[in-house]
Figure 1 (cartoon, rainbow, N blue to C red):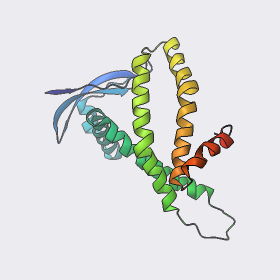
Figure 2 (cartoon, helix red, strand yellow):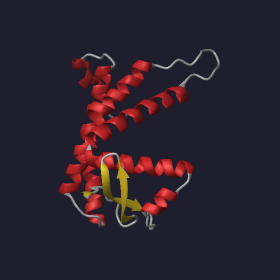
Figure 3 (tube, rainbow, N blue to C red):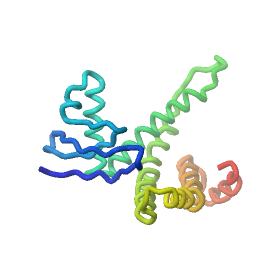
Figure 4 (cartoon, rainbow, N blue to C red):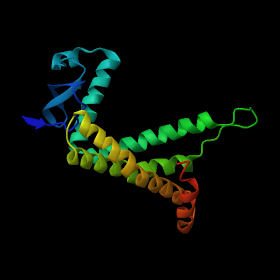
Length: 187
């Protein structure tokens, strides 16, 4: 019997419970995060309808995060960014009734690609490093991680993201530093 160990911990508000599940790849023991409830194999299999489908998907997705973390996060980030961008386009569409809504597929594609090749891998490695460099669940290490994330990582990450986005939009590489300086306070 193979054991799958989760590296995700959300603190004391969540309890970690081990359940068994069977997939195409075999039988696994899996730590599930629950809010004070014990999830048993029987409980998961007796869930009806959409709940059963969601539980099965959740177990499958959790397993994918364990065995293919970067690939799974990249695919997830691409899907979420694509749908998020489509929703943003629809919400920001001029609703004065003069024009018909048209999806900008190039813009959606840019966000999908950037999230797959830059955002997901970068954040995966950053938060893994941050958790390893400053372990702990008490208030002091949590505040340290937040401080380092907000005041050291973010001022580098956000301009890098914006520069990549602007370069994908067709802006010249030599213009991007100037654009970042102009937009620094707005970013």
